[in-house]
Figure 1: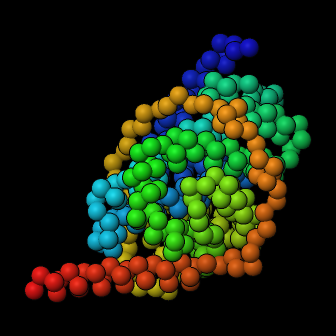
Figure 2: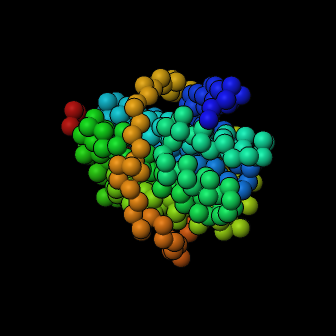
Figure 3: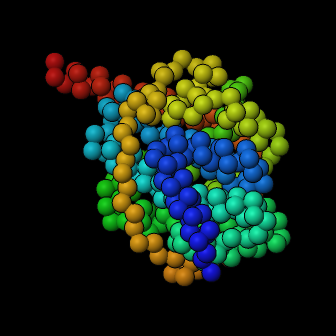
Length: 321
């Protein structure tokens, strides 16, 4: 039953979600601030660092090597892919976080209100289960499963993105060379993380999400990450963590200096759980590899990319002489 008080609450949540979903920086801060107030919701910390990584990927597109290798149209399409996916996830996840907050405030579960935000029946049931069981790890896993299924139809399988991004050469090249990664930096120059391969496959994205959760669950890595996010303001620039690396790197732009706010058209959201159901393997525990520090290998790959750009630039120059 939706009371008048609930209507006011729904209106407040809608407005606050819209406010914090204006761009990548606002989303990153909202996730981060929520986790610091409600650290039992570990997914919010994962979401904050994944959002930071999305910002770094966006501003990468403005660096000379990416401008030299990719056309403006290709760069704009890649930016919109990052932006659309992260906007959709926030529009679904942040109302869930706020409903949990108000459930705690009123000391009663209000998760039936999630249906007003078109949240999947799967997650509504999972929040009720969490309220009774306090199973922190199950909730993290459920949120990962939900959000990756959420973006499959409107982003990954959406005809425009499927044709012009995921079947295009820039994406295929990144995929083949394992250049996509989620980085977890700290203040002393270490970079932990995971490479993302086969991003278009929902099973792969869920597996990466579960491994990322396990990685951040390692106490030393989590504490160092918290020191980082508490000390370094999100800007969308890799300078956030590159300032702690002993490398001579060109400082990337701040996101708000190079990208305008994007206005998104919302869609009619179909419940992925009713449409496709659950796979047993999504519920299984994921094992981490022994190689958790990936900073060196990541920057070797970037150096190769930058070297390719300079060689291409020289060859092009010689061609016209």
